[in-house]
Image (cartoon, rainbow, N blue to C red; front, side, top):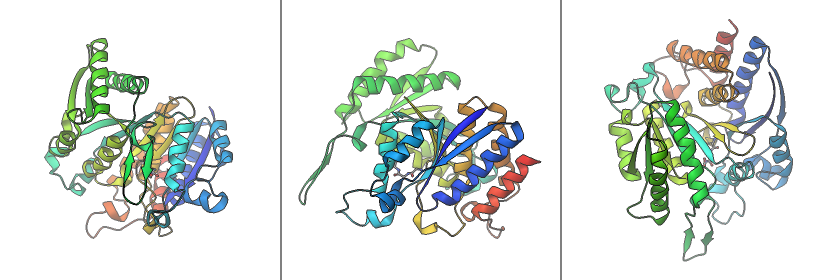
Length: 352
Ligand code: GGG
């Protein structure tokens, strides 16, 4: 297969983890006889510094040229600590999702047997937990009308029927491919937007009689994820709730550095770790590259390259079993491997 891949490393640890993701993709391509052409483009704080725009037109052109985007992370404390900043790195990520029409963000949460002890939750509670969160990605508060002055501020949680219906149908599609259990997460006891979500979900439910649908308030869902994560199979929710709940998912997996994602919709899909740019770790060779590498597995699977995806996942599992781990998931006293060393170990595993 020939694939055009846009590479957007972004900020902070982004370039370091991206290097390992691309190395893994190249190794898979060589092993299975695929041809990959790359174009690298700027985004986030890096792009603001260079051209004053976190998602410049040239980057958008590269994304449109590509069959898939491999994205790392954006964010920079210089902007977080400046409430007057007119432009922020994260706007680049939102602009990319909006311009590419990527309304469906697929975020799997799974456990790794050898890492159960890394979760703050009891082993028996989380062992075997395996669910996906389908997060609506181009609507809600992140994109609704905003206002801020010195005395007041608001964000609007705006959703339309077509936006809600299409993401629910994506969720039902995934539920049918899995254990046929869908949980619609909302705050319908308080929010009008959530009541519309629930109304539309109840209208669609009879079309999917083979799927068990249940409804849960987001506060209850966030608690249930920690006390009974195995309850969930597919969870669907709006943009903001999905962003928060999937970070919580890292407590189940054991590290933010283990959570990949895929964003799909109207044009080029994007594959990226759930985590951000961790600027404090930039350049230190300590960031976990596994979320980026697992995002490569999701990319391969998106193009139906199943064997290739399985091999990447097998290599990741093997690295964890062999104790080749970055500091945040290493067992006490175990050797701590760097970003590069973990990536190189996985590349070697795939080659041999
Ligand atoms: N790789 C994801 C990333 O860079 N996240 C930073 C961020 O701004 N996240 C907000 C969001 O995902 O909506």
